[in-house]
Amino acid sequence: MFGYEFMRSAFIASTFIAITAGLVGVFVVSRNMSFLSHTLSEIGFAGASFGILVGISPLVGMIIFTLVSSIAVGSLSDESSRREASISAISSLFIGLGILFLSLSSESSSYATNILFGSIVGISGKEVNQLLILALFVIAIFVIFYKPLSFDSFDHIGAQAAGLKTRLLSIIFLITLALSVSIGAQIVGSLLVFVLLTLPAATAKYLVHSVPKMILVSVGLSLIGVWLGLYLAFVTNWPVTFFISTFEVIAYFLGLSYKNWKLSH
Amino acid sequence: MIEAKDLTKRFGKQLVFQNLNFQINDGEFISLIGPNGSGKTTLVKILMGLEPSSSGTLKINEKQTIGYVPQFRNIDLDYPLNIEQFIRLNLKFTFSAKQRNHENKIIKSIMQKTHLTDLRNRPLGLASGGEKQKAYLAQALLNDPKILILDESTASLDVEVKTQLMDLVQELNQKYHLTVIFITHDYELTKKYTKRALLFQNKTIVPVKVENISKEMFEVEAENVRI
Image (cartoon, rainbow over all chains, first blue to last red):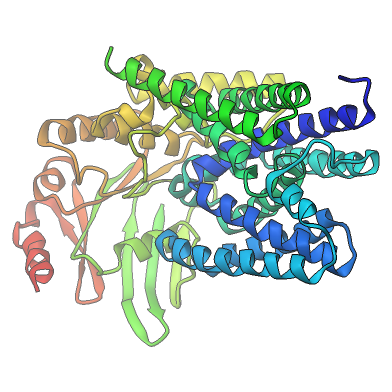
């Protein structure tokens, strides 16, 4: 399967996507932001179709849209309930916009399917390089801010009490989240990127009890998911996203059952 | 030592408190009492440097760091970290092996001090109310503060657990000369553990000796709550 260049590109790209999504996901889950990451991927769809419409790369369009909106959401309100309502309003608007941009541009509908649902053949060597740089940037941010981000994500009130700059940390986190959504959407598609950003981390939460271990398990599960997905997609010619989401969902429910079993013993 | 002179705080035109004059000595175990909304939390924020005062001065010995145990925490049943990992959140990032060794020693000694050593692997989400409070306390003690502020830490606990926690705080206060500021609505605990209280009354603070603390000082607030 590695005899084909597109498979090599897809393999390298999805490896880095899995690492960033698995890493960022641990913080998405501990900050209760699964819903926001879903919305960001919808906004990312609008950004990609906007990119196509105005003739810039869909990845750049996505990054612009998700970055601006994640910072806007972060400064909207700290009260999560109010935030959820406004987030879902915003997300409907952006799906509408995405469809409008696509229909205004002359691209075929198969292109729309690719950004929405992902594709393993859609990625070129140049795009792989862009993805690598972005992924390394996200990972570097997490290495630098690992301690304060962990504190703020796993114990927001305690972090405030200890005098951490939680507002700034929240913005830093939202920026990396926006980038991860844009990166991840290139393979698994914008509608399902949140699968990689939430499920492996949510599974890890049931299995282990420290931040570094959660990151290891979460990255491991997303790596297995995308590698398995790529292989099966190559063999069967079925969509890669189907295999990735099926694997992650099964792993999640196994993790949940394990936790419940442990609680009852 | 903490010393307030004519300390006043307003939010816009609204006066929170005015002309607070008090002193808290090193190693003292003092309670901070008064109705809800009387300014206890605002005073704590000023103490910690998270909020400026409007006028007056507040002096704290420079080297004295403050450990603060907040009143509410959102730890649900699914919370993944175990007690030791939760306490460790308050550590700084380091690559140095020497520093890491040092940190491990600190963690070990804090867990011993707070009687958490045997519980270190328990997921915090599954810990009891008293165990959780001990973990919060241990986390706040990590940077070796000289002053500890407990914000209604006993509020949701049953009597026996309350006493255990307060015994522990008293032990830390006596053995390690830790200054403790205990914000509370609990008459019995105030009487039993503290020698002096700062009472918020009519937008200012009145220092009260423990023998003069009466149940009424706590009941004023109950009436206010009912209204």
